[in-house]
Amino acid sequence: MIKVDDMPVEETEKELVKDEVEDDSVEVKPKVKNPRRGVYLLPNLFTTAALFSGFYSIIAAMNGNYTHAAIAIFISMVFDGLDGRVARLTRTQSAFGAEYDSLADMVSFGVAPALVSFTWALDPLGKVGWIAAFIYVVGAALRLARFNTMIGIEDKRYFTGLPSPAAAAIVAGVIWASNHAGLTGEQLASVMALLVPVTGLLMVSNVKYRSFKDLNLKGRVPFVFLLIAVLILVLVALEPALVLAAAFCAYGLWGILGIVFKQLR
Image (tube, rainbow, N blue to C red):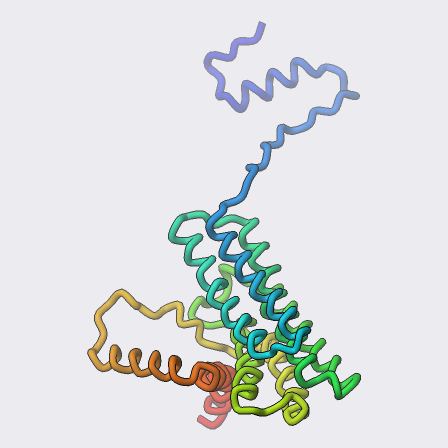
């Protein structure tokens, strides 16, 4: 008879298993905890909305409605920014949500911008056109894979490489602003053949981009900051296509200019 009153629980279980299994041919398998079933609804709904917007962008481009296709990419950016914040606020982060978000980002900020730019401007260029679009897709895929492996290691104040939502915003913003100005894809085919692959390469570069995660929006700021914010909102409301395209193109150049200025010092 085995006395278990004075033994720790884990050692007690080991001793019981040892006594019960006397034959060496019997394999003792460790107990595996059952994984939790179900997913968190709220943050994954935002991720699904972002995925839907990216998918709709592709459908709109196939139907020749490039303005709606570009706007859908920006809408996907809004939902993509909300899903993570909602998960943190409601404490519903999960490994499933992180993987689902990456897959949705690949569609919305990888495949969708490449296909929209291809159908709008790059198709007449033949092989050059689809290779330019493919470089962007590969850049987005590698960017997302690298980002997932650097979580918790990289400095939160900076992104290594151009973030995929910002890259998608550059491509979509140029298309939206060009359509708004009356320019066609054929007129800007050469420009897009350069812009699209360069944007894709920036995503996998080692150029540092500010993440703005260190901004303290809860603290007090000078009154002039509020006036600047209102002015920016007014400009976006008046000319959303031009302002958004210029803002994200400036962000894309900011990292490159930072390296140039650093070398000149």
